[in-house]
Length: 169
Ligand SMILES: [Zn+2]
Image (cartoon, rainbow, N blue to C red; front, side, top):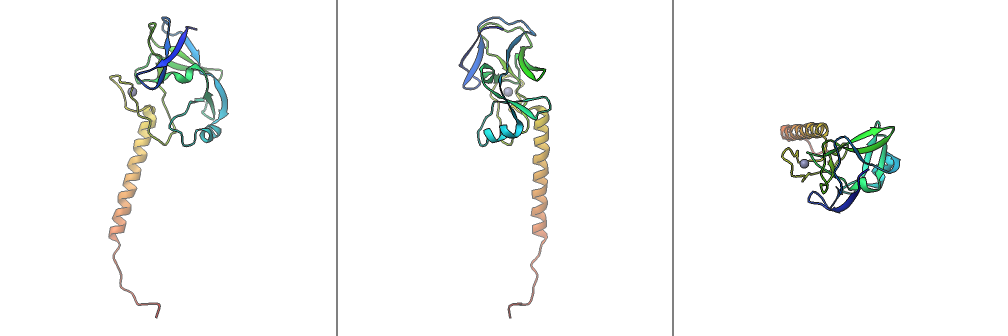
């Protein structure tokens, strides 16, 4: 595995940079950390704006990132990707990477309730770290909510005051 260094990043706070050239397809590092259930992860990170959770397999187990890999930032135009083998997650180069470059991969976030804006600055930036599928899901949910609100407003408006007798008498 190549020598890596953590230092301040233009993308977000700190990032992981390589001190050596990395050839395409080479494994760069492993996403290490404690294995916990998704439910336990939700409790640990309740109310926090970010997590270091990485879903493994069907997503019921997550890795609570601890180590260098948790510093690898998201990019919509990354130079790495994650690949899973026997419930272990590795970060591998998807192109030749030059010494000094910051390592990035696409987080493809899912399941979160809060915003996850992306500032990667790449040309194809989708403005969010959520996966394209998750963004579609969220857009559908938002449209549904809007429609329900419109419907509720309409129904309220349709209700007319009705005269009645004073039953307290
Ligand atoms: Zn982006």
